[in-house]
Image 1 (cartoon, rainbow, N blue to C red):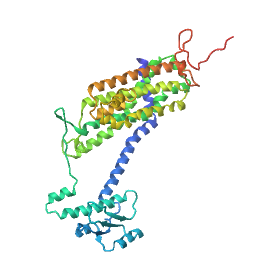
Image 2 (cartoon, one colour):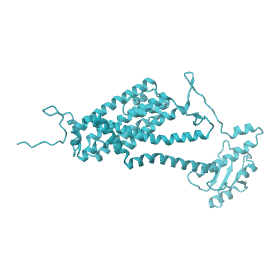
Image 3 (spheres, rainbow, N blue to C red):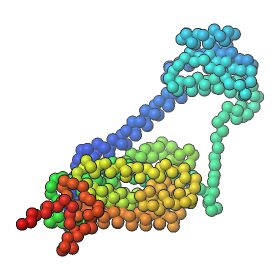
Length: 420
């Protein structure tokens, strides 16, 4: 136990004191925050029409007779009797927009001739054309309520029920779903370190000295436990900004209010959150054990990093089947992804976030991941013990369980004294 705690303390201290670790960890929330701010600013500018500074001036012809001249004038439009000349002015760059309203706008398209303003500039011109026509139609209706219905959009409030109780909606999936995000981020950000925790000693030629003072099992399990601690630190760093943002949003509303997403309140479900926590931690331990086993075979970090791509492919497989997991959660494909150890963490996290994972299935997925985690850890210990002295060559799997005459494993690539 003394050596075990020393390994954990050493690995955690060594990782947390590296500036590169904090740069990589803090860069994620900083990048997300900057990107969200830029998107919010851009959206607000587009919505307020501040991109060009003034309203778009346009000309129009109206074969339908539905357009109100006063409303069109308020929005920057002026009628014209020479549509060809107006379109020619736009083509020549002397005007920005010309709109031709057909005789029956419900069945015929509204033709727009516009100055190019980028890939999405045409969306604003089309929205302006629709707004003129819809506002004109609404002004012709005497009842203001009917006019509001015509202008839309219609706000709806849906209440769904399951087993006689009201379902919480998407708000209950936010917190359990965050564990899937943290799981992916932890694997992506710590994957290389998982591979290298057994390769570093081999590259530094200190394996012999380490193994004379500590058991391989204690060393490997201690390193994996240290990575779990580092992963929890990263999760805390990523969670704090989200919690602060939610607190600010809720504080800006009325007292006692709860943050909402599309009208669905944020729901704290301890059961689903506990299952998500167990799946994320055990899945992290399982993939760490797998990467440790792979790293124990490789002679150096360069060759070990090549295996990380295959692990990432397996990790992302459940996302390609996201539609199946949501639409047919109890089908054979979903069941296979949920109980196969390498895909179980993500598949079960997705189903759990959507409330589609029953208690028995959650227990089965957790058991499957736990067994695989123990197997991979034990395999990593055996591979490290067998190939710890294979400094310059990859450990050959076919020779793993070959034993010497004394019944002990023969390390691949180990020194054989000359005879005679």
